[in-house]
Image (cartoon, rainbow, N blue to C red):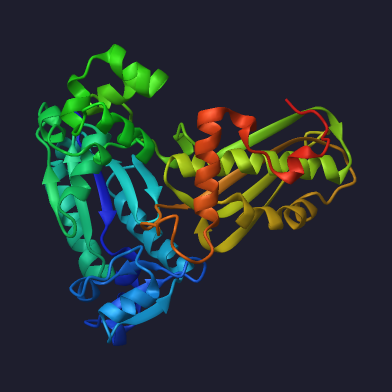
Length: 388
Protein backbone atom coordinates (compact mmCIF):
# COMPACT_ATOMS: atom_id res chain seq x y z
CA UNK A 1 0.00 0.00 0.00
CA UNK A 2 1.31 3.44 -0.94
CA UNK A 3 2.22 6.07 1.65
CA UNK A 4 1.74 9.49 0.07
CA UNK A 5 2.40 12.69 2.01
CA UNK A 6 1.26 16.18 1.11
CA UNK A 7 2.78 19.02 3.11
CA UNK A 8 1.51 22.56 2.95
CA UNK A 9 3.30 25.42 4.71
CA UNK A 10 1.21 27.43 7.17
CA UNK A 11 1.07 31.21 6.82
CA UNK A 12 4.11 30.71 4.60
CA UNK A 13 4.93 34.26 3.50
CA UNK A 14 4.28 35.78 6.94
CA UNK A 15 6.24 33.03 8.71
CA UNK A 16 9.25 33.62 6.49
CA UNK A 17 9.14 37.37 7.03
CA UNK A 18 9.14 36.77 10.78
CA UNK A 19 11.92 34.19 10.50
CA UNK A 20 14.06 36.61 8.49
CA UNK A 21 13.46 39.67 10.72
CA UNK A 22 13.45 39.25 14.49
CA UNK A 23 11.68 42.59 14.92
CA UNK A 24 8.54 41.12 13.33
CA UNK A 25 8.29 38.08 15.59
CA UNK A 26 5.31 38.08 17.92
CA UNK A 27 3.74 41.08 16.16
CA UNK A 28 0.55 41.08 14.05
CA UNK A 29 1.94 40.94 10.51
CA UNK A 30 0.47 40.91 7.03
CA UNK A 31 2.25 40.46 3.72
CA UNK A 32 0.67 42.70 1.11
CA UNK A 33 0.86 42.56 -2.65
CA UNK A 34 1.36 45.78 -4.58
CA UNK A 35 -0.55 44.55 -7.63
CA UNK A 36 -3.72 43.54 -5.81
CA UNK A 37 -3.61 45.73 -2.73
CA UNK A 38 -4.77 42.82 -0.59
CA UNK A 39 -3.35 40.67 2.18
CA UNK A 40 -1.47 37.70 0.73
CA UNK A 41 -0.54 36.13 4.07
CA UNK A 42 -1.22 36.91 7.73
CA UNK A 43 0.64 35.82 10.84
CA UNK A 44 -1.07 33.97 13.66
CA UNK A 45 -1.02 37.17 15.73
CA UNK A 46 -2.85 39.08 12.96
CA UNK A 47 -5.41 36.33 12.46
CA UNK A 48 -6.61 36.79 16.03
CA UNK A 49 -7.95 40.17 14.88
CA UNK A 50 -9.71 38.68 11.86
CA UNK A 51 -7.02 39.53 9.32
CA UNK A 52 -7.10 36.91 6.57
CA UNK A 53 -5.58 36.42 3.09
CA UNK A 54 -7.65 38.16 0.44
CA UNK A 55 -8.72 41.00 2.75
CA UNK A 56 -8.18 44.53 1.40
CA UNK A 57 -5.21 46.16 3.12
CA UNK A 58 -7.30 49.12 4.31
CA UNK A 59 -9.86 46.88 6.00
CA UNK A 60 -7.06 44.83 7.59
CA UNK A 61 -5.61 48.01 9.13
CA UNK A 62 -9.02 48.93 10.54
CA UNK A 63 -9.35 45.49 12.14
CA UNK A 64 -5.90 45.68 13.71
CA UNK A 65 -4.48 49.13 14.45
CA UNK A 66 -1.06 47.70 15.31
CA UNK A 67 -0.85 45.65 12.11
CA UNK A 68 2.49 45.73 10.30
CA UNK A 69 2.16 45.31 6.53
CA UNK A 70 5.31 44.44 4.60
CA UNK A 71 5.72 43.97 0.84
CA UNK A 72 6.06 40.46 -0.53
CA UNK A 73 9.58 39.12 -1.18
CA UNK A 74 8.92 36.25 -3.55
CA UNK A 75 12.58 35.45 -4.18
CA UNK A 76 12.96 34.83 -0.45
CA UNK A 77 9.88 32.57 -0.34
CA UNK A 78 11.19 30.54 -3.26
CA UNK A 79 14.55 30.15 -1.49
CA UNK A 80 12.88 28.83 1.66
CA UNK A 81 10.72 26.47 -0.42
CA UNK A 82 13.82 25.05 -2.13
CA UNK A 83 15.44 24.45 1.25
CA UNK A 84 12.40 22.48 2.44
CA UNK A 85 12.38 20.48 -0.79
CA UNK A 86 16.07 19.72 -0.24
CA UNK A 87 15.24 18.23 3.17
CA UNK A 88 12.51 16.13 1.56
CA UNK A 89 14.86 14.84 -1.13
CA UNK A 90 17.26 13.63 1.54
CA UNK A 91 14.49 11.21 2.54
CA UNK A 92 13.07 10.15 -0.85
CA UNK A 93 13.75 11.00 -4.50
CA UNK A 94 10.00 10.92 -5.14
CA UNK A 95 9.24 14.57 -4.37
CA UNK A 96 6.75 16.50 -6.51
CA UNK A 97 6.53 20.25 -5.88
CA UNK A 98 2.97 21.51 -6.33
CA UNK A 99 3.56 25.20 -5.73
CA UNK A 100 5.91 27.38 -3.70
CA UNK A 101 5.34 26.12 -0.16
CA UNK A 102 3.66 22.78 -0.97
CA UNK A 103 4.70 19.36 -2.28
CA UNK A 104 3.93 15.64 -2.42
CA UNK A 105 6.25 12.89 -1.20
CA UNK A 106 5.97 9.16 -1.83
CA UNK A 107 7.30 7.44 1.29
CA UNK A 108 6.23 3.92 0.35
CA UNK A 109 8.81 1.52 1.71
CA UNK A 110 10.44 4.00 4.11
CA UNK A 111 10.20 1.52 6.99
CA UNK A 112 12.34 -0.96 5.08
CA UNK A 113 14.79 1.74 3.92
CA UNK A 114 14.97 4.00 6.97
CA UNK A 115 13.59 1.86 9.76
CA UNK A 116 10.69 4.31 10.25
CA UNK A 117 7.19 4.48 8.84
CA UNK A 118 5.85 7.39 6.80
CA UNK A 119 4.08 8.97 9.78
CA UNK A 120 7.24 9.25 11.87
CA UNK A 121 9.28 10.41 8.88
CA UNK A 122 6.93 13.30 8.11
CA UNK A 123 6.71 14.20 11.82
CA UNK A 124 10.51 14.44 11.89
CA UNK A 125 10.50 16.58 8.74
CA UNK A 126 7.98 18.97 10.28
CA UNK A 127 10.09 19.30 13.45
CA UNK A 128 13.26 19.95 11.45
CA UNK A 129 11.62 22.62 9.29
CA UNK A 130 10.07 24.24 12.36
CA UNK A 131 13.34 24.30 14.31
CA UNK A 132 15.64 25.23 11.44
CA UNK A 133 13.52 27.54 9.27
CA UNK A 134 10.85 28.58 11.82
CA UNK A 135 8.13 27.53 9.36
CA UNK A 136 5.15 25.40 10.35
CA UNK A 137 3.99 22.62 8.04
CA UNK A 138 0.62 20.90 7.94
CA UNK A 139 0.72 17.40 6.52
CA UNK A 140 -1.61 14.67 5.34
CA UNK A 141 -0.62 11.01 5.01
CA UNK A 142 -2.77 8.70 2.88
CA UNK A 143 -2.66 6.08 0.17
CA UNK A 144 -3.70 8.61 -2.52
CA UNK A 145 -2.62 12.10 -3.51
CA UNK A 146 -6.15 13.50 -3.30
CA UNK A 147 -6.79 12.25 0.23
CA UNK A 148 -3.33 13.39 1.39
CA UNK A 149 -3.85 16.87 -0.05
CA UNK A 150 -7.22 17.33 1.60
CA UNK A 151 -5.98 15.90 4.91
CA UNK A 152 -3.09 18.39 4.95
CA UNK A 153 -5.54 21.30 4.77
CA UNK A 154 -8.21 19.87 7.04
CA UNK A 155 -6.75 21.03 10.35
CA UNK A 156 -4.39 23.84 9.42
CA UNK A 157 -2.30 25.24 10.92
CA UNK A 158 0.09 22.72 12.35
CA UNK A 159 -2.00 19.60 11.76
CA UNK A 160 -0.88 16.12 10.77
CA UNK A 161 -3.77 13.91 9.65
CA UNK A 162 -3.44 10.23 8.78
CA UNK A 163 -6.08 8.64 6.55
CA UNK A 164 -6.12 4.87 7.11
CA UNK A 165 -5.74 2.91 3.85
CA UNK A 166 -9.15 1.83 2.64
CA UNK A 167 -10.90 4.66 4.53
CA UNK A 168 -10.42 7.32 1.86
CA UNK A 169 -14.08 7.37 0.77
CA UNK A 170 -15.30 7.58 4.37
CA UNK A 171 -12.88 10.43 5.11
CA UNK A 172 -13.97 12.41 2.05
CA UNK A 173 -17.71 11.76 2.18
CA UNK A 174 -18.84 14.44 4.72
CA UNK A 175 -16.70 17.23 3.26
CA UNK A 176 -18.28 19.97 1.10
CA UNK A 177 -17.75 19.77 -2.65
CA UNK A 178 -15.33 22.69 -2.56
CA UNK A 179 -12.69 20.47 -0.95
CA UNK A 180 -12.43 18.24 -4.03
CA UNK A 181 -9.75 19.35 -6.54
CA UNK A 182 -10.93 19.93 -10.09
CA UNK A 183 -14.31 21.50 -9.38
CA UNK A 184 -14.78 25.15 -10.33
CA UNK A 185 -17.13 27.46 -8.44
CA UNK A 186 -19.61 27.41 -11.31
CA UNK A 187 -19.61 23.62 -11.40
CA UNK A 188 -20.07 23.39 -7.63
CA UNK A 189 -23.03 25.77 -7.84
CA UNK A 190 -24.60 23.63 -10.58
CA UNK A 191 -24.08 20.43 -8.58
CA UNK A 192 -25.64 22.05 -5.52
CA UNK A 193 -28.70 23.04 -7.55
CA UNK A 194 -28.92 19.36 -8.54
CA UNK A 195 -29.01 18.43 -4.83
CA UNK A 196 -25.37 17.39 -4.35
CA UNK A 197 -23.83 19.14 -1.33
CA UNK A 198 -20.95 16.88 -0.23
CA UNK A 199 -18.21 14.78 -1.75
CA UNK A 200 -20.14 11.71 -0.62
CA UNK A 201 -23.16 12.89 -2.61
CA UNK A 202 -20.98 13.16 -5.70
CA UNK A 203 -19.49 9.72 -5.06
CA UNK A 204 -22.92 8.08 -4.92
CA UNK A 205 -24.69 9.97 -7.71
CA UNK A 206 -25.73 8.14 -10.92
CA UNK A 207 -22.95 8.51 -13.45
CA UNK A 208 -25.30 9.26 -16.35
CA UNK A 209 -26.74 12.19 -14.40
CA UNK A 210 -23.26 13.51 -13.57
CA UNK A 211 -22.28 13.36 -17.24
CA UNK A 212 -24.92 15.98 -18.01
CA UNK A 213 -23.14 18.43 -15.69
CA UNK A 214 -19.52 17.31 -15.73
CA UNK A 215 -19.47 15.93 -19.29
CA UNK A 216 -16.27 13.98 -20.06
CA UNK A 217 -14.84 14.68 -16.59
CA UNK A 218 -17.72 12.97 -14.78
CA UNK A 219 -16.14 9.54 -14.29
CA UNK A 220 -12.72 10.85 -13.24
CA UNK A 221 -14.18 13.27 -10.69
CA UNK A 222 -16.56 10.67 -9.29
CA UNK A 223 -13.66 8.26 -8.86
CA UNK A 224 -11.76 10.92 -6.90
CA UNK A 225 -14.84 11.47 -4.75
CA UNK A 226 -14.93 7.71 -4.09
CA UNK A 227 -11.33 7.83 -2.85
CA UNK A 228 -9.85 6.21 -5.96
CA UNK A 229 -6.74 8.01 -7.18
CA UNK A 230 -3.88 6.13 -8.79
CA UNK A 231 -1.88 9.16 -9.92
CA UNK A 232 1.76 8.66 -8.89
CA UNK A 233 4.04 11.17 -7.23
CA UNK A 234 6.24 12.51 -10.02
CA UNK A 235 9.52 14.38 -9.52
CA UNK A 236 9.77 17.47 -11.77
CA UNK A 237 11.90 15.72 -14.38
CA UNK A 238 9.25 13.00 -14.78
CA UNK A 239 6.16 15.11 -14.14
CA UNK A 240 3.43 14.33 -16.60
CA UNK A 241 1.88 17.78 -16.42
CA UNK A 242 4.00 20.79 -17.22
CA UNK A 243 2.81 24.34 -17.68
CA UNK A 244 3.81 24.91 -21.27
CA UNK A 245 2.46 25.66 -24.73
CA UNK A 246 4.39 24.68 -27.85
CA UNK A 247 4.00 25.89 -31.43
CA UNK A 248 5.58 24.30 -34.48
CA UNK A 249 5.27 26.34 -37.65
CA UNK A 250 4.23 24.79 -40.94
CA UNK A 251 6.92 26.91 -42.62
CA UNK A 252 10.06 28.47 -41.23
CA UNK A 253 9.36 31.98 -39.92
CA UNK A 254 11.59 35.01 -40.29
CA UNK A 255 9.32 37.98 -39.48
CA UNK A 256 8.82 39.21 -35.93
CA UNK A 257 5.13 40.11 -36.23
CA UNK A 258 3.75 36.58 -36.84
CA UNK A 259 6.02 35.26 -34.11
CA UNK A 260 4.59 37.71 -31.59
CA UNK A 261 1.04 36.89 -32.65
CA UNK A 262 1.77 33.18 -32.18
CA UNK A 263 3.32 33.88 -28.77
CA UNK A 264 0.26 35.85 -27.66
CA UNK A 265 -1.99 32.95 -28.65
CA UNK A 266 0.21 30.49 -26.76
CA UNK A 267 0.32 32.80 -23.73
CA UNK A 268 -3.46 33.06 -23.62
CA UNK A 269 -3.84 29.27 -23.72
CA UNK A 270 -1.18 28.90 -21.03
CA UNK A 271 -2.80 31.42 -18.68
CA UNK A 272 -6.25 29.89 -19.25
CA UNK A 273 -4.85 26.56 -18.08
CA UNK A 274 -3.29 28.15 -14.98
CA UNK A 275 -6.59 29.82 -14.05
CA UNK A 276 -8.46 26.55 -14.52
CA UNK A 277 -6.06 24.89 -12.07
CA UNK A 278 -6.30 27.83 -9.61
CA UNK A 279 -2.57 28.53 -9.66
CA UNK A 280 -0.37 31.47 -10.70
CA UNK A 281 3.13 31.75 -12.15
CA UNK A 282 5.88 34.27 -11.58
CA UNK A 283 8.30 33.22 -14.31
CA UNK A 284 7.74 32.91 -18.07
CA UNK A 285 10.36 31.10 -20.15
CA UNK A 286 10.59 31.24 -23.94
CA UNK A 287 12.36 28.45 -25.79
CA UNK A 288 13.00 28.75 -29.53
CA UNK A 289 14.19 26.21 -32.08
CA UNK A 290 16.01 27.32 -35.22
CA UNK A 291 15.66 25.60 -38.58
CA UNK A 292 19.18 24.17 -38.12
CA UNK A 293 17.94 22.56 -34.84
CA UNK A 294 19.82 25.02 -32.66
CA UNK A 295 17.98 26.14 -29.54
CA UNK A 296 17.93 29.10 -27.18
CA UNK A 297 16.10 29.99 -23.97
CA UNK A 298 15.40 33.15 -21.99
CA UNK A 299 13.17 33.92 -18.99
CA UNK A 300 11.44 36.87 -17.37
CA UNK A 301 10.09 37.06 -13.82
CA UNK A 302 7.25 39.27 -12.59
CA UNK A 303 7.42 41.09 -9.24
CA UNK A 304 4.32 39.10 -8.20
CA UNK A 305 2.79 35.86 -9.49
CA UNK A 306 -0.11 36.13 -11.91
CA UNK A 307 -2.38 34.03 -14.13
CA UNK A 308 -3.41 36.96 -16.34
CA UNK A 309 -1.95 37.18 -19.83
CA UNK A 310 -1.93 40.99 -19.85
CA UNK A 311 0.65 40.94 -17.03
CA UNK A 312 3.06 38.88 -19.15
CA UNK A 313 2.29 40.02 -22.71
CA UNK A 314 4.18 43.36 -22.53
CA UNK A 315 7.36 41.34 -21.92
CA UNK A 316 7.01 39.16 -25.02
CA UNK A 317 8.78 41.45 -27.55
CA UNK A 318 11.84 41.89 -25.32
CA UNK A 319 11.83 38.18 -24.43
CA UNK A 320 11.76 37.22 -28.11
CA UNK A 321 14.51 39.72 -28.92
CA UNK A 322 16.74 38.44 -26.13
CA UNK A 323 16.22 34.83 -27.18
CA UNK A 324 16.42 35.21 -30.98
CA UNK A 325 20.04 36.34 -31.41
CA UNK A 326 21.03 34.46 -34.57
CA UNK A 327 20.03 35.49 -38.11
CA UNK A 328 18.39 32.13 -38.71
CA UNK A 329 14.73 31.35 -39.31
CA UNK A 330 12.64 29.79 -36.54
CA UNK A 331 10.82 26.49 -36.69
CA UNK A 332 9.20 26.22 -33.21
CA UNK A 333 8.42 28.16 -30.03
CA UNK A 334 7.62 27.01 -26.50
CA UNK A 335 6.30 29.11 -23.63
CA UNK A 336 6.74 27.64 -20.17
CA UNK A 337 5.33 28.92 -16.86
CA UNK A 338 7.37 28.43 -13.72
CA UNK A 339 7.60 29.36 -10.04
CA UNK A 340 4.04 28.28 -9.45
CA UNK A 341 2.00 29.67 -6.55
CA UNK A 342 -1.43 28.93 -5.19
CA UNK A 343 -3.04 32.36 -5.00
CA UNK A 344 -4.56 33.83 -1.88
CA UNK A 345 -8.34 34.26 -1.84
CA UNK A 346 -9.34 37.05 -4.18
CA UNK A 347 -11.67 39.98 -3.80
CA UNK A 348 -15.14 39.73 -5.28
CA UNK A 349 -15.80 40.93 -8.81
CA UNK A 350 -17.49 44.08 -7.54
CA UNK A 351 -14.73 45.35 -5.26
CA UNK A 352 -13.13 48.60 -6.37
CA UNK A 353 -9.63 48.60 -7.79
CA UNK A 354 -7.88 47.04 -10.75
CA UNK A 355 -9.17 43.52 -11.32
CA UNK A 356 -7.68 42.03 -14.51
CA UNK A 357 -7.97 38.54 -12.98
CA UNK A 358 -11.74 38.95 -12.58
CA UNK A 359 -12.02 40.10 -16.19
CA UNK A 360 -9.99 37.11 -17.38
CA UNK A 361 -12.14 34.72 -15.32
CA UNK A 362 -15.27 36.24 -16.84
CA UNK A 363 -13.85 35.73 -20.34
CA UNK A 364 -13.03 32.10 -19.47
CA UNK A 365 -16.63 31.56 -18.38
CA UNK A 366 -18.06 33.05 -21.57
CA UNK A 367 -15.80 30.91 -23.72
CA UNK A 368 -16.68 27.74 -21.81
CA UNK A 369 -20.36 28.47 -22.30
CA UNK A 370 -20.46 29.90 -25.83
CA UNK A 371 -17.28 28.65 -27.46
CA UNK A 372 -13.68 29.78 -27.91
CA UNK A 373 -14.57 32.66 -30.25
CA UNK A 374 -17.28 34.16 -28.04
CA UNK A 375 -14.71 36.76 -26.88
CA UNK A 376 -11.67 37.76 -28.92
CA UNK A 377 -8.93 40.27 -28.26
CA UNK A 378 -7.78 42.98 -30.62
CA UNK A 379 -4.53 41.28 -31.54
CA UNK A 380 -6.48 38.18 -32.64
CA UNK A 381 -8.01 40.15 -35.50
CA UNK A 382 -4.60 40.56 -37.14
CA UNK A 383 -3.44 38.03 -39.74
CA UNK A 384 -0.83 35.54 -38.60
CA UNK A 385 1.24 32.87 -40.25
CA UNK A 386 -0.49 29.51 -39.80
CA UNK A 387 0.96 27.26 -37.17
CA UNK A 388 0.13 23.73 -36.26
